[in-house]
Length: 430
Ligand code: PLP
Image (cartoon, rainbow, N blue to C red; front, top):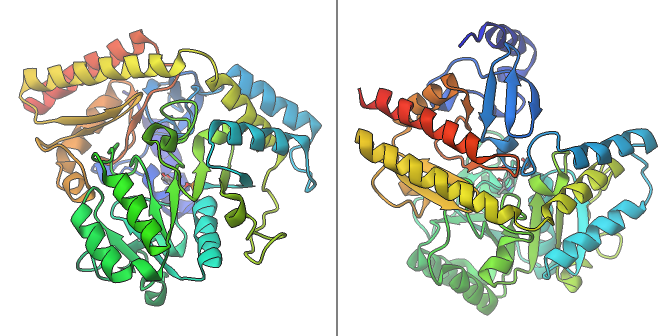
């Protein structure tokens, strides 16, 4: 595969853009280095790079692109916004329509606020929880990514009951001291941390189905335990559904789990590919937000007509009957086919899959927490990633990320992918 132009553009990018990328995960550092593929065009399930190579895309832009790229209904909505004004700085009917759609799909939301990214959404839910509870400490789970605001760029301390340390230069130790990070799916660690910190906690930040160290579902009873002790201690539960909302069905993960968080943060899919975030929850908590209450949050771009129209169009597409069932069917075909190939070639592999989202882990352990995901073989993943790329399959360049199917993927694409997997595993086994 000729990648000359990709390499040239990336080299040029490195002179002008920090690290040559606008988000660190786009680089190929985690898969053994090299120039990331520079894409020029995307349509449906496919990418074309600047050298004219075609790829089946499973990155889905890290989640938002569930309808496939350049979906005509969303493209029409964005075109409408382009010709009727993309940014007003005034209320619009679109934001009301969109808020109502979100509320109808996600019953825990009495009120909504639109922002511009998942980072903003999560950051603001924490502020609102702190304002509402008059407490400062925050609990979260190891390996779950909640954006890049200070409070969530905090690593675990030396044990479940210890305070955090900064996970990025520039995050003050004083802020990290406000955060307790514990392992996911570990009831004992949670109970111990709640004993120690529960009554100082403003909130517990939960990815109800983890998407950031692979797709990891909560073990039976774990999420309920999280809710029960939080309630007992007076801490709010915030769900980060930036990845999960509208990923597995028309609604959020909370509906699937049968649980009701106090606040929820959204992003990704709900923008149909344009920048967006949103948060919402119980009325009395949301009424803490300005202009009704003392917790400040604002945004020049928030609720802009382009993102609103794109998001509405995306949800309209997702309301079509049968689409989630089809992504699940194709996901199952992928899962089974990949596992069969792995067995054939003697590759050690487990797969976590839910619907059209799956993660391959080069390990023989079922991954239920971050530590197990960390211990999977990153070197083999890096080689596999490059072998797949060479065969026209675009995956996320990290062993922790999910493959995302879209409604544009067809069985032929899956079959083609499985051929590429089989060839790649044969190479790996050599
Ligand atoms: N929360 C989760 C679960 C995410 O996966 C991400 C991004 O990957 C974020 C928050 C941050 O969203 P954004 O990148 O839109 O700021």
